[in-house]
Image (tube, rainbow, N blue to C red; front, side, top):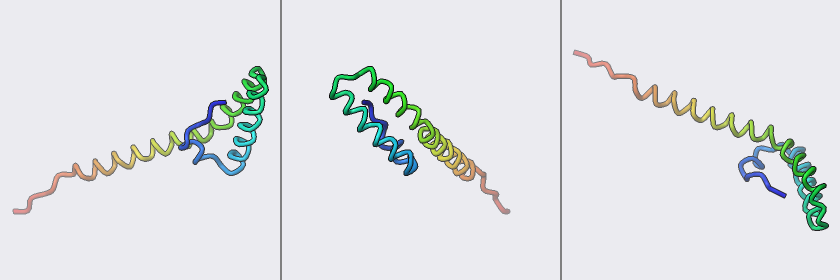
Length: 83
């Protein structure tokens, strides 16, 4: 079973995280029983489960980019010289 990244796991809601952990446990058991056909199905469910958290991570990145652009734009404002 493939785990998702720590960043994605950190953005899972409590319910999503509980389901993720349960699915990973089931998938690991199936792999230990060499039932890779069924483990594949469980992995697919995990992939679907983590999609909202991946989108939340992308949005955080976009927001950070917007904040950085706004900060840099603010710093680019030319200072006026008073004579």
